[in-house]
Image (cartoon, rainbow, N blue to C red; front, side, top):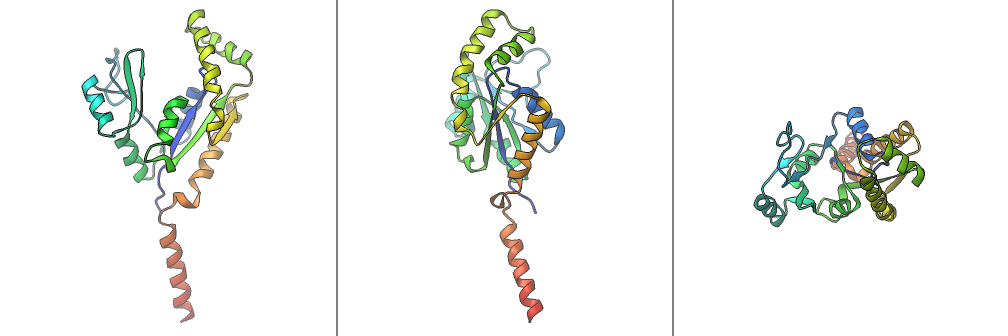
Length: 213
């Protein structure tokens, strides 16, 4: 019995562990597909169209938005990024779940799209602001100015926590991953995710009738 695929949105402030948890989920279940974004920025060395991103011109991207082919999109530093709808629909109809690593604005657009009824949204909170700052600095990737900017944006991100279906505090990666698995497994079993269930139950009732006859 093929169920409808889910659209799983993961959001968090930078440094709360969202990307690490997304990678862990992909390793846990290889039937999960990661939503590959489209972008108008040029590819970097080693990037392949359709793997890291779908690379599109500004005109091509605008045409996709106008045609309703984007589930969500936003402009970041002069370039556009968005989630193409086609691959997500194909995966959903094949019973495969799609994982979105997006911010609250992108999540809001996906929830308000025509596929909103198939969305589950999960927000990841840090255990404390002090720990969030420590995690950002321990990466050793960003300047103090960049980290300060990320911390300022974190307050706005966290303010949207109540818009999500599930909220997890990421004190321990293993425990948070286990909670994420439980959420996904439970959502997959919901009655309304299984379009063939009505027909199956009709078959059971028909079997009752035959046996009684």
